[in-house]
Length: 236
Image (tube, rainbow, N blue to C red):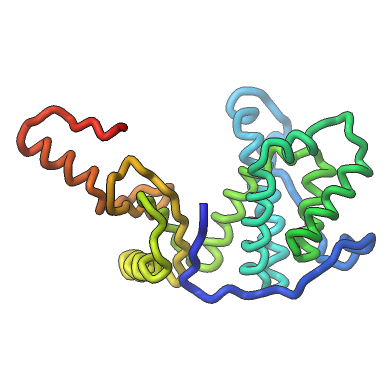
C-alpha cells in the first residue's frame, strides 16, 4: 500500500545505530492503565489488554516525537517498520524464545541502519523487542497513526482503483478530501482492486465510514437495480 501526503514532509537527519543509542535519545516511557481497583481480571479486560498495550506504546512514542518536533519523521519511520514487519518471517524471528537476545539486538541494529531510523524510533523498536511485544507492532502502528492524525489534523483517505493512478490524480483527490473534511493535511493510501472494473473509490472519515464510489462496478449495479435485473457477476 503506497501513501501520498498532501502536506510537505519533514526530512530528518540520518542516524546510525550505536551502543549509546538509547542514552542519546529521549526516554521512552510506557505506562499501562488499570481499573480503579488496580487488579487485573479476566473477561472484557483480558480481551482489551492487547489494545491497551498498543495504545500505551504508541502514545509514548508520540509524546517523544511531539517533544522533539519530529512527528513527520517519526511517522515515516513507523511506516518503514510496518513494511518490515509485514513479513511474517520477521515477526516469527523476534517472537522465537530460542533465539538469543544478542542476536535479536544485532538484527534490530541492521533494521535501524538499513531503514535509516531516527534514534528515538530505534529506541522504541528496542523496547518493543526487549518486552517481547513485537506481535503487537501492527496494532501499535495503527494507534500511532491515530495519534499522529489527531495531533497534526490529518485526514486519511483510502483510494482503491483498478490501475495505479497518476500522482496528479491523487493530488486532486487529496484536495477534494481536504475541502470535504476541512482537515489541515491529507494522507492518501492506495490499493489496487480489479473488481472495480474501472474508476475508483475513496474511503475517508473515522474507520473509513464515508465512501465516494466512482467505479464502473457501482454504476453497473445501479443499472441492474433500476432495471430490476439480477446482480451482475463481475468475477472472471
